[in-house]
Length: 336
Image 1 (cartoon, rainbow, N blue to C red):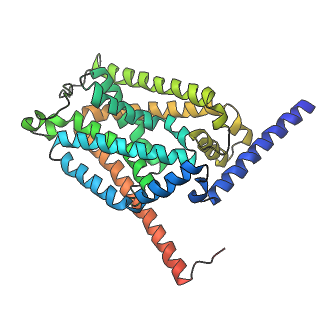
Image 2: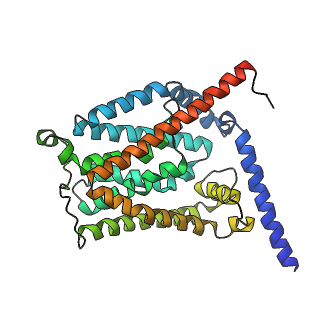
Image 3: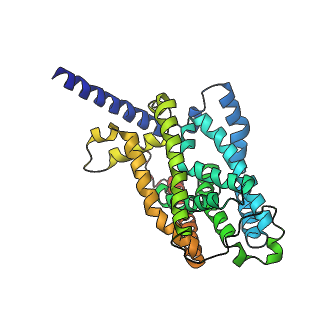
């Protein structure tokens, strides 16, 4: 009986520890989170603040170039996508190091965009790798925009980076898949990267359809294996430390706030539950990605709706922020 009570006390103390850490993290500003060491402070003051100061101009210029060349020159668009992706990922690595968010890099979205970059640079003629890359970037990664509530907030580097990682790889896969329809053959002949021929739209159940699902699932298994090894074992101490943020800590907080959920459920086999919900999401998104692969109209509407959600969500958040500032200046909002 004493062992049971002590076990319950340990679970309660652990929950309280995470509650205190989560509540305190909400109150602490980013300026205080960077006070880790001299390098973090210097990086924040000399780099991050200057990048954020001109975030709106940078993001608007980047998306203007991307949108222009997306409809005019596939070769320049691919180079713009590569350069901007590497720039945003390097910028995010620096930010996540300062804020203790590096564990987020083991998430599927970073794995997905990395596979697309590898495909374009190293193996554009590998059709099997193309199948897996297309399905992963068009399916689960794109729909995670709705789950994570992303927004295309151009004056925020963090928000626009998240929007880029989840949507632009999908757009890039779309333009590679349907390039023979979107561009003139003379423009395609100028493309530096020799992509494999994907002009066929015939629905082949015996060969191509099986390959689309099989290779994508194999790629997902590789990510899941790496996630379990590094998050579950190698960096386990950091995952369990409330000072460091990760998808596991976010999942713990989300599940705990769900109604009719026992709090003990939150901490028992948490990593297994997280992997299972990822598997369910992958299986759910797989038919949508396959349908996108065979139908240009559905693929275009699918990507367009996700992009519209990004901008709509950005407008809603901006409107709420403007209203809050107006109320604060007019004295209507009571300061607590």
